[in-house]
Amino acid sequence: MSETGTDVTATGTSRLLPGGIATAVGSWPGTDPREAAAIIAGELPDLAHLVELPERGVGADMLGRVSALLVDMRFDTSARGYRLAPRPGSVSRRARDLLRADLDALEEVWETTGSAGTGRVVKVQVAGPLTLAAQVELPGGHRILTDSGAVRDLSESLAEGLRTHVAEVRKRLGADVVVQLDEPSLTDVLNGSLRGVSVLNTVRAVPEPEALAVLDAVIAAQSAPVLVHSCASPPAIGFLRGSAAAAIGFDITAIATRDLDRIGETLDAGKQLVLGLVPTTAPAIPPTWRDIAEPAVRLIDRLGFARGTLSTQILVSPACGLGAASASWARRALHLANDVARAFADDPDSLSFDDRDQRQRERAEALEEHADDYRNSGRRDDA
Image (cartoon, rainbow, N blue to C red; front, side):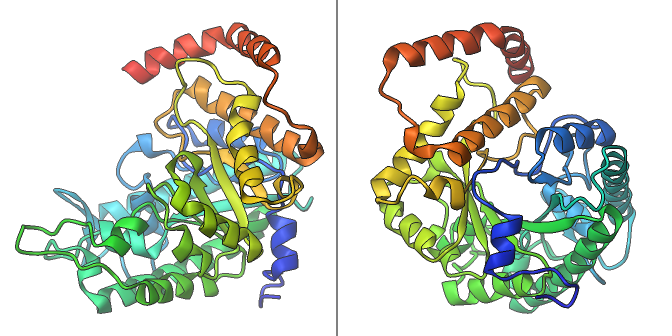
């Protein structure tokens, strides 16, 4: 039990991050925080989240938002993205204003829907310390990752600021909170595949024990269960299995045969998996919920786990953020995730994928039901 009264033990994790539910990764199309909050709260009853709306520009994306949370540190923009700034400026002020607007919008929706004090859970997302160190620059232009002291300062600032943010969200919404650390650069950090400012300035691979210490320091400082999500290909599943994270999320299309043992070990270790099953943009052929569910079911079967694992340790999400999706596909993606999660929770043993006639009928129905959505999605995605 944390100092704030939130249960971050295995029992608490299973209550706040149960299997057989749907969620989303974080980003969402559009620029209207109230509209986005209303959609997310309505479509994701089991694990809604505080959305990111990157279309609003500087300070609204995954990296820029962190400037609103850091303690005694802040960002400015550079030719390549963000860098540490010596004093507060327009970027940090804008990030704080945007985050405040997002939280105000979610609080309003929470109150109007009667969700406050009901036990609903909300997820907050933030770029993880390793991705921040990889993608944000020092004032001189080098990546923070090249300076171990700066990495330590950044992770400590993030840990403190995130802890304060969680406490505010919990208080304002009257909700339990789950934290998501986004680590899309994790594989590059571990492999040493990041580019320096020139061919003569290389960025070393960070040894796993060193990287794990940085990540776990942020996780341990939180009063809520932590999910670490990575859209990297391949995801560093073995590394994350050894972390203090309660759950791991990744794009299921990014894994290969070599990852299977690590996934099985992660489930054996009692961690939850958030499987990114739903495409982030509309496929050419409208998928049915059964199409989306099949890779997860076959994965569990291949690993030799009971189908019941789908209802106890597997959560369903889009493969990554939906910020680049059309509005119609983003909503359809949440519907599909909910349908799959419901099938996993209700009767996973009955799921079958061998009836071709049934699959064809379902695909025809999906195409007819969502034809307008797909036409709209195509126009948006081709733009």
